[in-house]
Length: 127
Image (cartoon, rainbow, N blue to C red; front, top):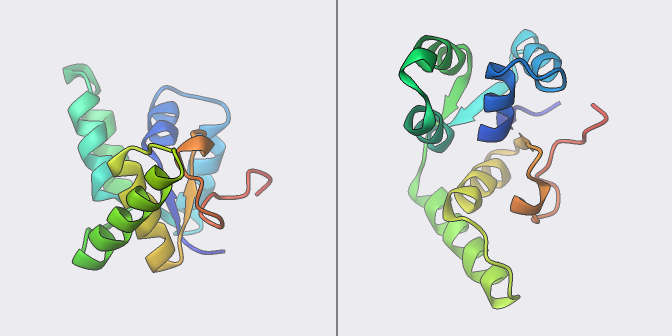
């Protein structure tokens, strides 16, 4: 199975003890497939409360990080523009996370399926 980018929603669910997210993330860690985009690191740290800092930083440290690149930025911009032309407005960060997945052969673990309409990006929920 390819590496899996853990979307911010799944990371937050894990940190809150969600019964779906916990086993999924634990399995990804055990299999060495847990990845975080640096964009998710931004979202997690921007939204955390002071009392959540320790757990959040431990979560981030337990994942491999996927950096941004000019190629990812271009692909993300192309995706944003393509979907916008179809009348679908996606968040720029979600386009960049999807581009990261596509260009690196990763899947994205998310509950926000509508944020990632690009085919082949979403992790099959039955896994």
